[in-house]
Image (cartoon, rainbow, N blue to C red; front, side):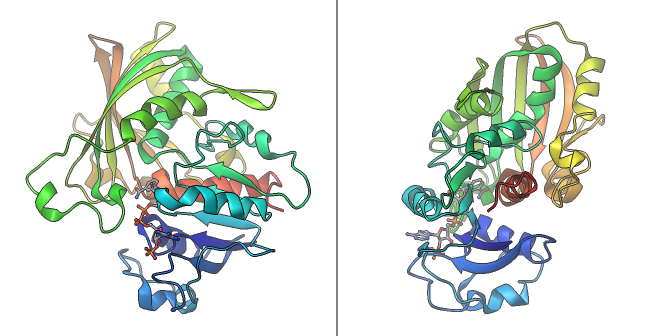
Length: 344
Ligand SMILES: NC(=O)c1ccc[n+]([C@@H]2O[C@H](COP(=O)([O-])OP(=O)(O)OC[C@H]3O[C@@H](n4cnc5c(N)ncnc54)[C@H](OP(=O)(O)O)[C@@H]3O)[C@@H](O)[C@H]2O)c1
């Protein structure tokens, strides 16, 4: 399947380029960024920030402005800046592409599935019936919301969920490029990330929601979120307390989390982690530096599962924000859509 990447020069776009280099079903054929960079070979304009080398084929592709034309690639992966993503992604979808986006612009649109492939693959049904020649948009949730929703989903299935409180410690790569100035973050914690708490309070309700005909009925879960930026390169940590509807045991919660699997594992999708959730027993785990790369950055780590005097239970959740939380997660959504015959 020929694939275009929008926002290819950014933090998430670079991850897409790296992940697509040897992909078994998808072939990267077009890279788009802003007018500032368009017209030159990718290798000349990108400030490559990953440890792995820039793939040679991608380096030779000439960067284009993101215009769909009359026949866009059937699959478009978007890592566009949030400020410009909305109308550009709509244009690609209207021209026939299946767009999988990391940007927040369309996440809460009623006709856009907000998908964590292990949790709510059935939401893809929203775009299954569409007229010939018409594309659609699939949204990858917010980077912290993905880790939170993955960790809450097995608990919801086993015991039902009522309320949750989450405090995050979010990595610098989550702010994109050029990002947070070094002087602002060194020796510091910044207790505000614009728009983030609203996303974390809202998106899990849609992800855990029920497909009812042509719409998603949101889950009634109430989430209270506080988000901070910390001096970590990659890996968002979330300190989560939660109340279940039915009484839970530690063993039951542990087993529900550790045994959780979904459609990506059943279908053995190329980016699917064997274990979507890794449960840690060590008293000081998970830690970003030690655990963010588990399962190629696609596993969510859960540790310190213990009673909470306020809500019943608490745990620490860690996920790699640019892999599971962005490019890796979106690629898994694209692989699931492809496996279900939605890429046309
Ligand atoms: N970083 C994360 O962990 C993370 C996680 C989840 C979701 N997201 C979301 O994913 C998206 C990308 O994030 P990022 O961190 O990768 O951002 P970024 O590093 O700032 O990259 C933004 C990309 O958008 C392009 N762009 C900017 N203005 C444009 C315009 N007017 N027309 C066309 N292209 C334009 C940039 O191209 P130029 O280089 O030419 O300027 C660049 O390729 C955002 O919507 C963000 O909210 C990010």
